[in-house]
Image 1 (cartoon, helix red, strand yellow):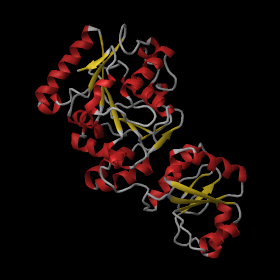
Image 2 (cartoon, rainbow, N blue to C red):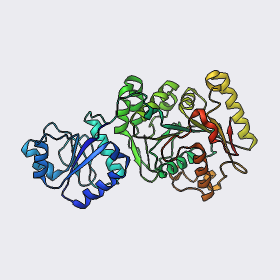
Image 3 (cartoon, helix red, strand yellow):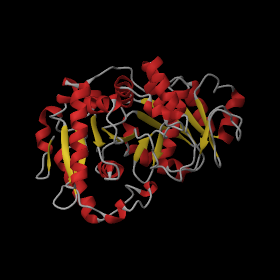
Image 4 (cartoon, rainbow, N blue to C red):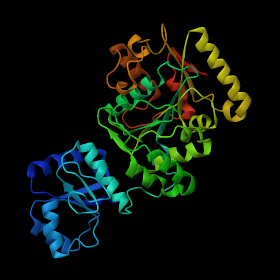
Length: 386
């Protein structure tokens, strides 16, 4: 597929050089070709020459000069605004689409992609299940026991897989999703919008996802803000969540999807399990944890029958605690706050155990290297099939 053309017009050469260098070494550069202009006259000649412009991002001052010539009419334009910036209102520059000129580069590129999608661009390929999409690894983290460390593991997986070079999407499907404590209520309706489109116009869901997703800079992953209404989670079925995961894959932007689940066992869970190459089921050696796992498995077989039994090859029991795959970390169990989970939390022993688990799953760097049919490669001494 040919690259899309991003035209950047800014007078600050240090700014353009830093951005160009970052794009060159990021996944963004795989689908975008950056052309930089610091002189408005040169850009004017470029546009009048009929060269492709899929998105023009420019300093507000330069845009003013270009607009007076009429050459930006009909072009997808984004104003680089000093300060906050924002979409839809043009409150600072007068342009319909504007973004903050100074912000973390991953967020800047994400904002540019979202603006492109808002213009109706083809930021998302309409390609169905190609080999690239099918090759995205989906890993779900589950336990029938609460407080055992599902979110801790999910976010550590996200962080370490991202560090290895993979492009990661974190999908939290808990009813009570508190991991973004301190993030405020911004985007609280995003998941509801996405789920509605997944059900009504699934072919447009990936494009909407691109415009709604957020970037967690410290973790190096993308995510969707949690639902403001917890009932939205309870309304999800296996069909809905399957389409949601397919929309994430269809963006073409990710190698790995990490799904963080709560302790229920409903239709949505079955949908996530079926979409996953690896289901990491956490359990401890405590009698209560073992009993809850047995009850959940018995319920799954009784309620979902063959669909549940077919998950056997993808489910891996991950033991937590003494002699287990993951060590017990007291400060995590004491509930130090979900807002910092995954951000270097816990001990080096825990992070080392997660790194070893990632190696056995084969999901570092280039994404999935051992699919559902070869899930035995993920089995370590204390990680065993269900």
